[in-house]
Length: 347
Image 1 (cartoon, rainbow, N blue to C red):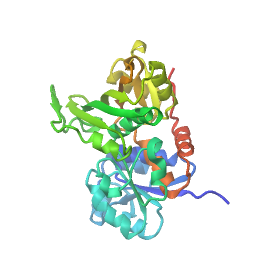
Image 2: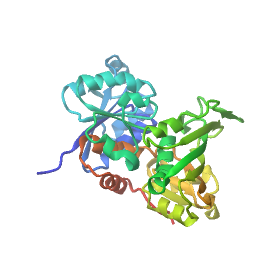
Image 3: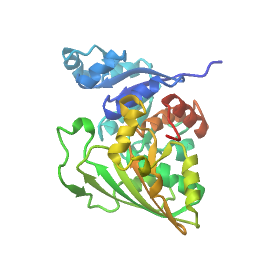
């Protein structure tokens, strides 16, 4: 008997939504039914050029979208009512997804929310490497933010293999997404988030329940990724070689080297484009090899977080877990990474 195919619609065709939609089309056990939005801007119009069926997230937006040149196939609610969808990946702006939950509940469809929503919206926050089994069969799952995903991959790997007594992570955030740089952001300054811990630490604990972590964050006047600097106290002494081996074995984590000329976020951004990925996306977390330092049971390291793309594989794995297309985390991760061409070594 052939394996089932997940019928997926992406609600919100923005920075994350358009990437998730493309990723779904690459998976042999998934079908993109369509995408949904409320505007007729260049991104949505490009979706029609790709052959994606476009739906209006709100009925009152149908006329506006059609007059803007988008061939609207109908409304999202009509699509859900017809029973044509198994999972909605909600990539709408923060807090909008929480309001959309009522719609998904009404029609009994599963939904994946993004990190802009609170943990309580889904009750299950998700990073595939850490808690895949927790999402099995769930109706609602929340993929955590790009920063939290990065923390759960890197610090979570050390915690799973050795045990973290406490972690302290400083996050230097990009001020604004690239496509919005002409509209908002900051210039010639650094703006600290004055609340300590920042929300990333508590968010990581929604995935790794017993992790002792405190995070601090600031926004810088750049739009190329986030930078993390971590100080991790482990439960036992470890060597630098042990840390390298653990991260070498961790899915979706790679090493980059300053000695290769990769000495800043800009270089990693350019590297991602040179890898030939769509939009220059980087699904992996690049850890600077030279930054890894060990003193007894204390580990220090730095990595970059590709804010536009590193959560895309997690959305794919969340779909499989919720529909139980794969019950084993490693099997799903391996399948996702294969079809997205995720790598473990650059050179």
